[in-house]
Length: 96
Image (cartoon, rainbow, N blue to C red; front, side, top):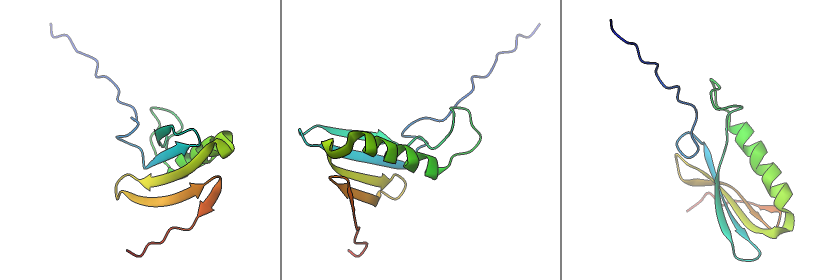
């Protein structure tokens, strides 16, 4: 009799499946990198970059003035999507 093995379900993974990456420099010199969570739960069928941006904005609001510089990158193209300095958004110049 052949024994069937159950396939392990694979959910979304940070870094591998994220749309954006956030890099933050704090006032005291600490640096952190965060990946966007673009899904509602680990086994959801779809991803939405708006969910990740909403979560990033909540983090920045919680950090407040403690975060000196924040840069958000698109992981696929490695281009800046948004940049903040001491809580204020800075315009990004797309021209090289």
